[in-house]
Image (cartoon, rainbow, N blue to C red; front, side):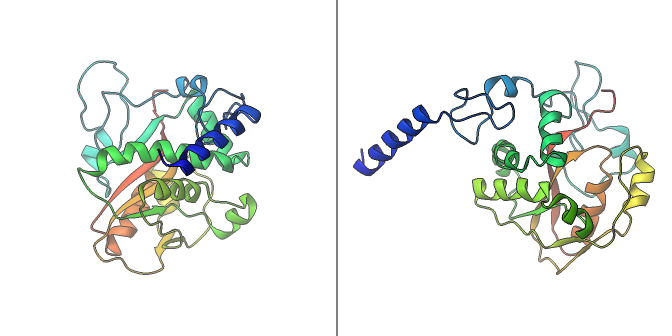
Length: 247
């Protein structure tokens, strides 16, 4: 073994002994293998997406049995994106992690959540290779209030893990929109119509659009439409959590 690697392992082991890494979500020390990992207790609280669900928008269905099939929304109005990859369902510990990341200045959660999402994307990358990560942007006023864009933090973590470039400035929000909470799917689409634009055109890139949560899919639809119109070959969506309507 390389002596420098051996020394590095010894130093890392000593630091972990003196300063045990803590879970970035619950704060329990010594329960994780490294600073970018969640403890087993928090991971056990994540509700993974499982069949049956929609193969395009990843909407989980109520029944525990059956095979994957397209949901009514994707059948009646097929989305411009090809599929959604999500860590799990927006509930329990995963919902808590997203809320901390998004509303409680939990920017430190972007890296471990992004790494988990990158692992899922890596498993699917051989099917449809992609070459660019694009985070859903915040409007300038919202960015000043929050000081960071949670989607950008996730995209940067994915990009580092998979060695894929992140185009943080490519997609911009042209106007501030009212919050989406409490709006129906059609109202969300109207709310976001014309709210996004590209700073420059694309040249046939396969793009992964990154966001924290997918609820009705209105944001993903509008951003994907703009990316495709601007020259993207295809768009897929990666989110931390997928909201399930029946939950």
